[in-house]
Image 1 (cartoon, rainbow, N blue to C red):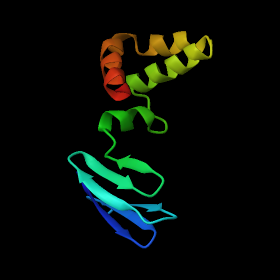
Image 2 (cartoon, rainbow, N blue to C red; image 1 turned 180 degrees about the horizontal axis):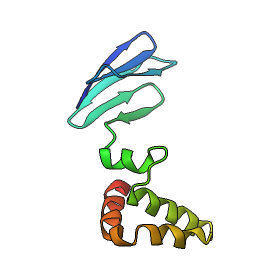
Image 3 (tube, rainbow, N blue to C red; image 1 turned 120 degrees about the vertical axis):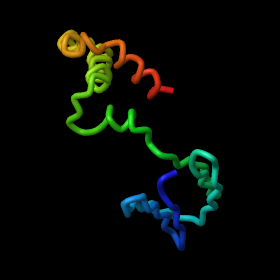
Image 4 (cartoon, one colour; image 1 turned 30 degrees about the vertical axis):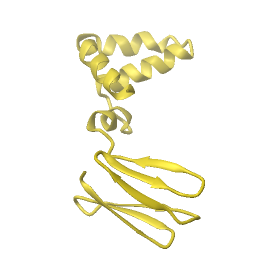
Length: 109
């Protein structure tokens, strides 16, 4: 939505609204198919879908984030590893737990 895709030779380049560049290199020719929410990338062997990352998802996985949803995601990771730190994370987000769960659910789908 907020970027332009450029393709030539073996490189796909996304140019963002503020001039941000992301470069993808391909070993074989590709075909770009625009979609309403992204672009489908077809090659002889693969099919990929490139789309914008939601702000809510970005806030969860940003390095050093202390958002309640980030701490909830971290608590889930500790729970899966049977680590007691899960309690510490849940205590930190106690007041904002319902909102963190709501954002977490949206990002998982």
